[in-house]
Length: 253
Image (cartoon, rainbow, N blue to C red; front, side, top):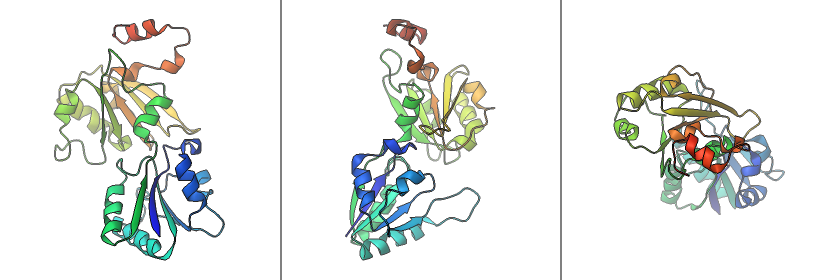
């Protein structure tokens, strides 16, 4: 008897891992989040128990304690339970809390990594989060907590890092994000790209700068990319050489 904490990927069902698909196909129960694509859920065999525990903004949703209790109960009753989470279960998905609760209850647990939107969304928009001569690293943060507070993150350090910043769960906080990064010393003209509903047919890409981000209204789910690479679209460079592309971003070819 095992509960498998499975990453469902960034949105497109084709980006589900082979391991994840195989586990879903033989699951006795699937406990899934709201943003998991229906095509992924439908991989479950006939008769499998399907339980939606997704949190919907402004609507009653199961608490994390209630979700943990469901997982423990099903993990004790069924041979294979799949806890299906968007992206990767250990990237802002509370998978760590669920794994700890299961282990404390002596329920066998496996973690199956998934493709996180932190890298999939920029890639789908033609944005490399690292690019030689432009950005040698990237940082992934969540804006779920209010960016106007330094309790969770050092926004001044993020503003001055000089590498790519990828922000998840920030669709409703674009004004606060922009204000906090600008207050930390990041230039107003720093390129920004916002990818909504990444890898799905509804994908939308908005390009602006840090000053413009303050006024941008974004649909959730969204991934915000801040930094020089956000001005790039390597998928649209068919008429440019690699050297021209790098030069346009201020990098040496």
